[in-house]
Image (cartoon, rainbow, N blue to C red):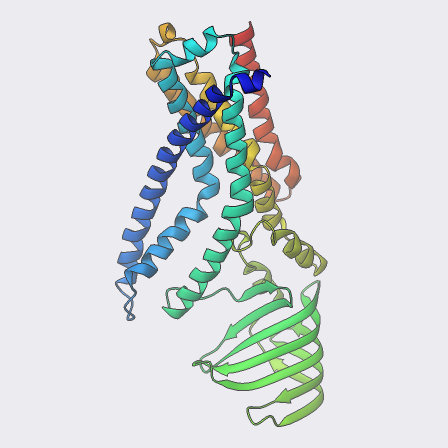
Length: 370
């Protein structure tokens, strides 16, 4: 009954915070996009191919999505400070307190908004970012902006790309296993084309082993453009790929959506590779709601105060921003330790937000409930 009684007030607080969040987020995103367009326009000006402004805009949009895990916590921090400062300045917080609502009651709808933003980032924005990353990769290759990633994971296993002065190869390995410095696989297909993507040859093999400077293929079938087929028991296919190169150039975590990451992590680890950076990114998405709630509470402890106690307002707001930045950078340090294997990835991802939330709750309990 009490929730229904204050429904209008809760909606007012949630909408008020959403407006502040939207304003801060779009301002930050706009600045990122603007700098991206300026930098890309300068770098694209030296290219022999004329790159349309629509393509430049897509690169800028990618930069906005690429920095979401940074801009969302920052936006929530600034939006919470702005929201509670406005409510305090207009004495609306005083009125809310006067009807008997505690800080935990009027902050709860805003916490729900933060959790919703984190879930939206995980389930919706992450797949959009993944799709945009793949599109930009194709545009980069088309306009010769950068070299495309030589490694790609799909439902058909591992795809590798190799390019020389005259030909390029697309290698698909369905079942992969890394053992030391060698890589073995089953059901291997190699497509060989010229640099204009004209088909030259297709090679199929039951098994393959990547050694130094060559793939050792067994039970090989070669098919040329005339569909003429040759068979070999053993064939050495020259390559510049190595196990170290494959591991170093594994697809960036951001190219996978939240839904694709578990499958890739499982495939990569079963193949004998390390997927720590992909696990770290997965946990970042998974625990983003906690991070956003921590940033909201940090802003709250510095901006929720009666109007009569706002003589040091600028100092308080500056302290909130600095503390928020400090927590964010400390979280990045802990995550880096997790990615390097010094602590577990789960602990590195969840510890800082939980500690920040507990400290903020303690401070609010002390000031609000004595």
